[in-house]
Amino acid sequence: MAIRNLRYDSDEILRKRSKEIEEIDNKIRELALDMIDTMYKNDGVGLAAPQVGILKRIIVYDIGEGPVVVINPVITKKSGMQTCEEGCLSSPNVFGTVDRPRELILEGFDIDGNKIKIKAKDLEAVVICHETDHLDGKLFLDIARDIYELSQEEIDEIKKENEEKEKSKSKKNKKKSKK
Ligand code: NI
Image 1: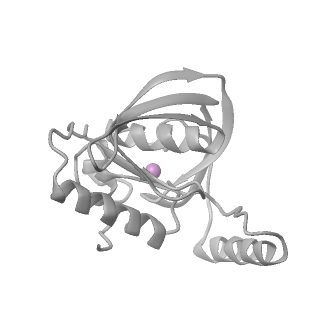
Image 2: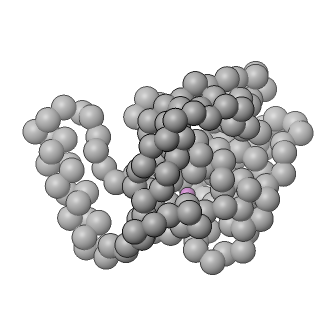
């Protein structure tokens, strides 16, 4: 496993459509594991392959329940609406408000090639929308409002506060979510 380099902001690879994966081989499995490592290393809750420079339809995420890999993900059903604050590992320190479905169904394949169907709501639904958008060359900033940027010092401060809170409370994390 390895940490891969992230692609940022105006990198044009982030604007391209990723291709369907035809065969889930060892190279794809290695990519998935590297993406999970890269996501954790950068304190993200989700990551899409174009963010590490690979135009293939694969996303990973972890909303605190362990890592999930979805290959060729397709949202087959959406319902409800929620408003949330999002960030993105490809636009560090930039946040904005986005409307997303409250619940959805995601279909795709796991790294063993098994067909999977995920019923997601709340944060998981947000992350899935954000990451699958990346596969179509869309960024949350395209649809976000009230966009603001924090300095690294402010981010570190928030992280520190959250760590303190986590220590005093339970293990439940409340950190800024970057996808
Ligand atoms: Ni993102």
